[in-house]
Length: 240
Image: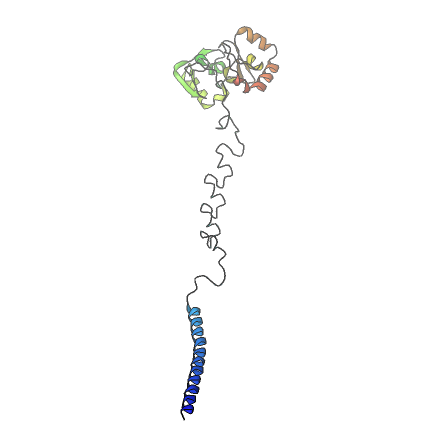
């Protein structure tokens, strides 16, 4: 009887263990399924599709975001540049360094106009008088006009006004330097009484004797002087 009892108890224990393990095995997948569902409901930190800019933290929709100085304007990285391709080069233009007034033009050793240390052109000679009176006349400090960095003096208000309206009509060739000297590639002073008007242009010379030499071949000397001007202004010496 006792043997049957113990056998029954043993069988019951075995069945209990088996049933317990079976319940555990069934419960475990349920827990796994729950965890999986929980994971699926968690918010996603990144999009399912990889962000092509993820490796570039500063980049975004704007392809130039990684370049803070760049933008739609291709010249944005060059603050001095703009629509004008020469903007970064203030001296450039359609004709870079063209004209005497160009800021790019190289400075010469001598001034464009023959003048004294006080800036008086041609020792104060009235250049208009050669055309209007047919002779040389001294100018006055009462009637002056500034042109090309020099002060030009005149014998009357009328002559001053004529000059002011069109200086190029009355100013001597080669800035008032000796025409014969310039034809030889040199610079020299001039005297008021050594002059001649050729084709409406005034030419001055060093003195009467040099004037005579120049007169021996006026067209030839003018042609040579024109070829030497204004490079002759780079002479270190002005012969006086």
